[in-house]
Length: 120
Image 1: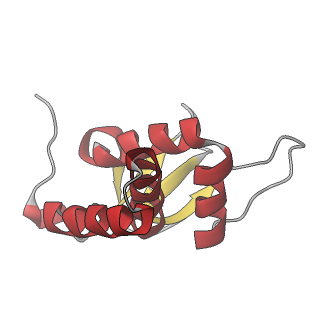
Image 2: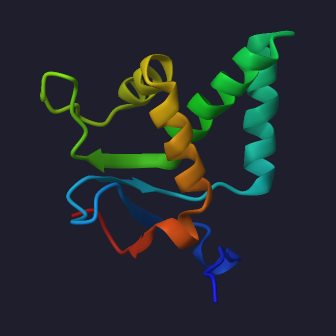
């Protein structure tokens, strides 16, 4: 039976592991349909008539609002990248494939993640 998000967990934080040993991943909060719609409108206003830009903006807004922290993210030289809103925005700008995958996993966090009482 698949796990699904319910109102009881809407304000909780989930850890979404990126590796099987759980040493890399993100802590994120679910966003309601209402909040997602608000962010979509904001993304569309920023983009004007450019649908592709609106989609990119929406991904950036969703990730910056949902992700509370991450661990194990590194640049191509192996240097750690600490979590910040700016780092999430840079992820969306320079690695849109990873950003899109992250958004998909966050959107399914009840199935992809683990309920986290607090950040480790």
